[in-house]
Image 1 (cartoon, rainbow, N blue to C red):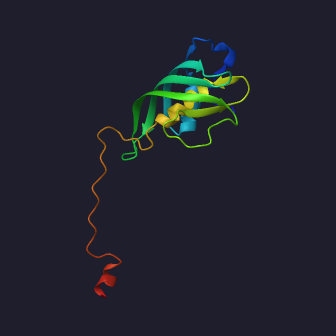
Image 2: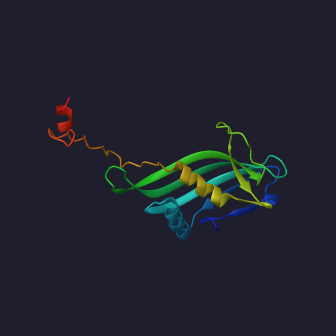
Image 3: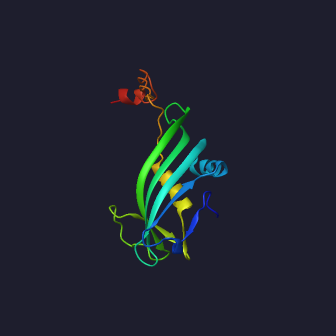
Length: 161
């Protein structure tokens, strides 16, 4: 399956000083990302990367993601616009060479095949990670629970004691 926002970068483009590059999602890519993320809309997504070679086939990437999305409030079910801004760091590693052990302090690893990394897909994944899983419209409050009525189906059972 082809990623919604693909920007493959050949490893040979990353020189000794690294490579600075920006991914700006097109309107069509934003629409496809909204479907993937289960959002009413992705209005814009832009991500700047600084790529550096750690070795011949491992690339570290520092990124800065900015996006405007429409989310649905879990309390009111109203749609609202939200801004996302996130700094992150990841490592691109050849498929099959990912770390076996779980280390929450280590950079996330993104496997790749061949001689190119897909920074567009990396930006899309970071957008998914940055989204609030329970978005709330600013000021939205959960309603107070209703008091239980005097007589309920279990009241008769309580009287048997």
